[in-house]
Image (cartoon, rainbow, N blue to C red; front, side, top):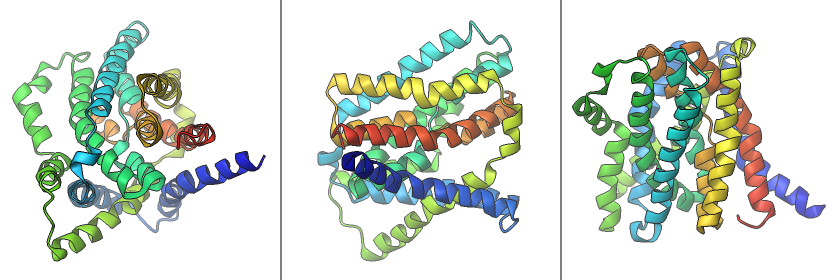
Length: 318
């Protein structure tokens, strides 16, 4: 019994602070201490400044040669591509409305790894977990964006959205990608950052997770739960339960364990990225369905991520 209670306490210490801040954002928005302008400005500040600073600092200060794991990166790449294809193949046989199909596919595979994933990885393993998660983030950011454009464009037959040059340019202009590109040489060559740069970067990096979680929480609209649908339910089930279980079990069979396995579980088990709603609305998809999937996966991940961490801890993987 003591083992179960200790494991439960460990899990609560990892997950609870993240979702408490997220829920605080919801309460502050409801009490009008923060408003839509704050959410919009805060979200932009996180995307353009503080999250790139966090990613840059975590990669720049790590021992690249010790952390870089091509097997882990390869598994993530192959796993996401295969599950993306399978989700599309299955969903196309059930969902006929093109504005729903792309939104469902995106909602079922695209993780909010940049915020929730980094926060959980840091709480689990400290700076080492954050550095490893940042390297994975460098892979999944462009991958998620390209796949999202494909699944939202093709069903709507919007070929103009798929111009390869424009797509690559947008990806290269992404502040997070730029942060990774600038940080990798620093980490590779072991460059010591000047103290003023390190301190300034750390200040900005420390802003990221609290501000990002507050803005995500403030963006949640619990009233939309009344309008949830079977499509939102199945996208949520795929995102939080079916895919994380299959891909984490596959990672264990492949030979991953400990920190590597736990970080993969977090990656695959994160809720759907809030950016999926913005992209769906901009590209003519069902914005209401996208919002419902973001909401239900965010709320549901409180339980599913906790359960995943609890089980991995219980069997001695972390």
